[in-house]
Image (cartoon, rainbow, N blue to C red; front, top):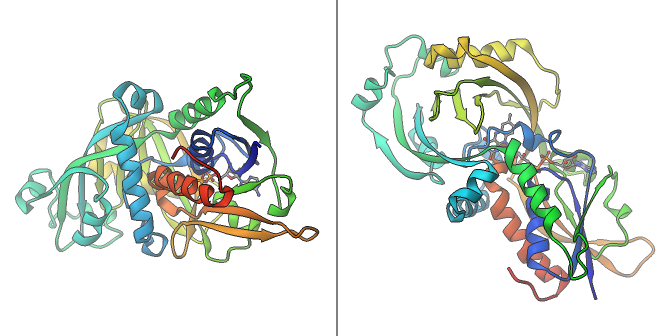
Amino acid sequence: MRKSVYVVGAGIIGLASAYKIAQSFPDCDVTIGSADYHPNTTSDHAGGIVNNRDASPQFITDDSRCYILDTKKHCQSMKSDEANAAGIRLRETIIVSTDQEKMLDSVSAGVDFQLLTTAEIKALGYDCENSELRLIFGGQQPHELYGCKGYTYIIDTSQYLPWLTAKLKQLKNREGRPRVEFVTRKISNLNELNSHDLIINCSGHGAKELVKDEACVPVKGQYVLVKAPDMKKFITIGKAVFIPRCEDLYLGSVHLVGEANEEIDPRLTELVLRRCEAIYPDVRKAEILKVGVGIRPGRIGGSRVELEYLQRAAEPRKVPVIHNYGHGATGISQHWGCALKVARLARQALAVKAKI
Ligand SMILES: Cc1cc2nc3c(=O)[nH]c(=O)nc-3n(C[C@H](O)[C@H](O)[C@H](O)COP(=O)(O)OP(=O)(O)OC[C@H]3O[C@@H](n4cnc5c(N)ncnc54)[C@H](O)[C@@H]3O)c2cc1C
């Protein structure tokens, strides 16, 4: 008998979970039900770097690091024309930081990283004596600088989300009908989804309200997208971040813990531009394509990827729910690893054979 799976949320986490379920369980029909879709999700606001970088260490755990490594392996396994179509690029990277431990942790999901010597960091133009660096190191003059170089995967969500959606729409059952249905629907309680065999909760920062999870913490980010076709390196010098996506350059970003206000603050725009200008003065001359705000789904204790059984009021049957939310500043990095875990949990919940 065919089983029915309902995925709440159509950000990168919901789409990847739905795809992995549909691919692994040919006898399941999947519904994605979401309040918003691309281009109106948090995932649309991400810079797209695949690494362990989260300014709030309480939002990232060893499990998150494993999910990130699985996403990196997924990017590595893609053929180049497929990666191109999906908006995934491997970019040369330079990182300079005052905290060597954090820096090395953040790049452990990168490729071929090696440390830079103090002389090499100076040769790049970054010297502790340089007073301009104060602005990009949070108002403090740095005493010691550490650096590394290598390569980082960047997933441009403006391409990746439509690409994944198209792949979901291509999946057909034996009769040639679509296996994945998309509906626009906001729910206020998981109990509203009573006719399904499995629910997958990928509601991002909506989970705070939906499942009353007090560990969820919104983290405001504001960024600037500019046209700068010559800049092809991913560079992070203190708080100045340059992410070359497929068609634009992403300048990021602020990290305001506890703030869920989606208004654009012109002072934050200026702060991002001033920090980046201190590293790459041409940024001021570049055409601004967009200023955006997104709310990162922070969660104390890291992302929640686990199976729970919900008791229905009028029925003896308990309904399995797989939660997959709270990925903080690293949801793009974690998405594929989490989708693999969701498929493993679904095999347990549905007790059916799977092609995982
Ligand atoms: C400025 C910024 C920069 C970032 N940069 C990076 C980066 O470089 N690398 C990285 O790895 N991560 C980055 N992130 C983090 C990343 O964007 C998030 O962790 C990720 O997008 C979370 O994906 P999600 O699918 O869980 O959430 P979302 O994309 O928010 O999707 C949640 C979905 O659930 C739906 N929903 C919510 N509640 C309900 C409900 N009650 N009923 C129905 N539907 C509901 C929403 O409509 C939405 O479709 C960044 C985030 C921001 C804001």
